[in-house]
Image (cartoon, rainbow over all chains, first blue to last red; front, side, top):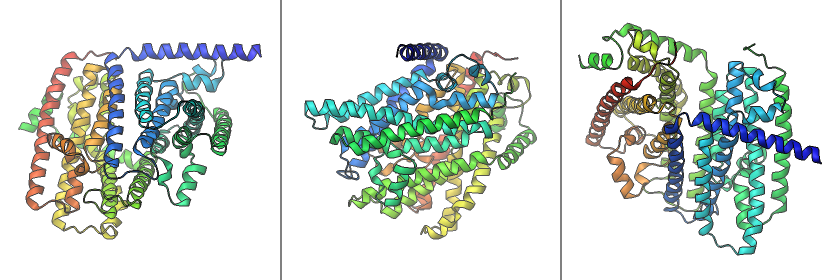
Length: 271
Length: 277
């Protein structure tokens, strides 16, 4: 037990140091840092404007009220912010494979997948998380919650967001790992980016059963932001919570295996 | 004569068309050779179109009525908007130009008798030509099955509006790119501008569905000529006079942006410090 705790503390320290080094690197361009932060604010305003325009014509969107729809957008923005802030959608992995410089990261005495993941993060994107929290607060204020119910739902919501993070992270790792074979992975990244961006809409808009099956079972977009928002609004749903947890675990294990399989095909160009 | 001035002011010697033709030709050949990213963009935009269609289907499904748009009209709007996105929009120009400046490769353009502006225009014209050829073929069935009642004259105006849209987009992102002279790394600025551009050009929602105050603000900005105006032309929303007026204003914005980027470039080059060898 002590050993595991020590390992976690070590990983946490390395992550903090990496984050610090990334902040230093980004602060070499302070203008960009602040513009990115302002850009995140703009993104929030545009998201609100988009939802406002849609709701100026309708009262609910596939059963979601205005504030509930805002909650889905906020949940998506939270996940997106965490993904950029912690691992920059694994940008560093593709970059290192393409430039043949991955060796430098692989020889470090730490789990390769973890180090490759956190090697590059975009600290300015933590602003996205802050703006998402503001949007989340606006959405929550418009919804009617009793105090005790809200705390339990919020706890479950946060738990499901962690699952969402792992699902998105795992899909990203698989897509990025394809670069081990193709070297050029930008195209696939574009598809992934589009798919993740689509999870800012409630997946209930897919009223055809085939479309709903594709976007929940095959591509689990529903579990990214719609399901966490649903649990926060309606309370616990054991089936959904278990499904989300199961998917997160399966996706994570599968992506880890795929990454290590891809590593075997890595041919360095630097040494 | 004016063109010669602009080209030389933007970092090169007098206009020598042949070298830019070579850049154009090389990039066009490269585009035909590397098709993976192209098809990936197509799939990505296709997926995004499916979701947008579902979003609006869901709204109409509940009896919602969106402005003067029928459901078919709105879906057609987004299909044409995707076509414009895939063909004439040049988001990459900002990153391309910004990285050349930031990483010091810009030195080449200072030393060689080659206009930086000319090089970038030739490069992205090739990208757009390739996209236009391929996507016009892929989207052409729409002209027959999409129930667009257009005339050859309309198609001609649409083509002109696409060229204007290309130059507006290109100049807009080129200006963002050369801001690298001042900010170094411009990912943040690019991200912000991309959001503003997508929203105000009518890429996410038709501009005529915006609240009145936003429509008024947008009339004083160049964005609507990038997506909304070309769509309105091909879907017969404008009278001939309105088409002329919109093309005129679009063209005026191109001129304004040419002057603006020129000033920005001249100021930037004074700040530029060559890092690489």
